[in-house]
Length: 89
Image (cartoon, rainbow, N blue to C red):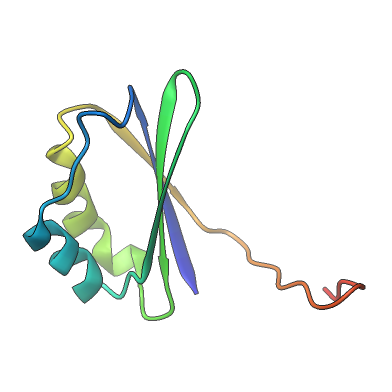
């Protein structure tokens, strides 16, 4: 599963995605979006089994330009799956 995190300043009140933007995200193979925040930073976490973050960067950049604020993108460098009471790595 690929994952990407997009960081930006500000709050979520003025951030929105229309139906066309969400359809574009789904076409990239993204199946889950999560919005996280603290007092200064907003983070959009996108992941999906068929998502290829490297090939999708241009589209993601275009979608985020609609937010009208500078963004930083973090790419996944590792993934660990934990099972049951004892984790296996």
